[in-house]
Image (cartoon, rainbow, N blue to C red; front, side, top):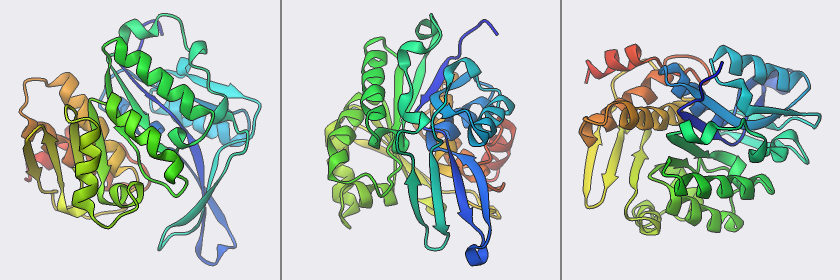
Length: 303
């Protein structure tokens, strides 16, 4: 492999350990929101990479093999003899979880160790997830986003709220929103990030950080809206038989970025509908199942 990817997602790749009924058995599942976004972009046949660090143990090996299977550029995936980052999901409904990752491999990511010359080819970079709430990784990623922004690279940001994003995350939320060209949020994100039930007020506060950005506001089965300046477009979700919604948001932001990169002639409404159908397509398989362009087009035809 000699060419460099046009798209990178930088952040965390982790392993979910999910309690099966009765909690006598645990099932493992590879994941991580930024890693899922990279896989979703690769599924749309855009040369992509996940820039992050994983362990050298069995958990890291699973992530390495899954990254290879997703056709991600493995030169951007760093490996360290450190512990893995684990998400312990001890109850599914309602979701209850905590993270295990003291001095884990993800925190040792080194942007300076990425392959020489990659920046000249990068057109879009995605950030988000718990990687931006875990020091010292968070500071490294904000610095990387700032430098890519100066280079004219498109930036997308999905905070993907988790319980460790408390008041200490507020400054990062503001800074990453200021840097982003596209910000993706859900109703759950807004409630958690702003610690408020006033979702309309929270969304207005977020947009005030960067009025020039485009905002993808997802609402699950109700579809999504795209907000650009004083204009907004709305799209309902296609009717599907949902297997699960894992990775739906990751697929939607990847598809929106893909559409903006590959189909710049599309209207904002068309970009939005493509993103919504990508999110729906991810719900048709178990776990994070990135949809192909063909599947998204089939779902678009049903709208």
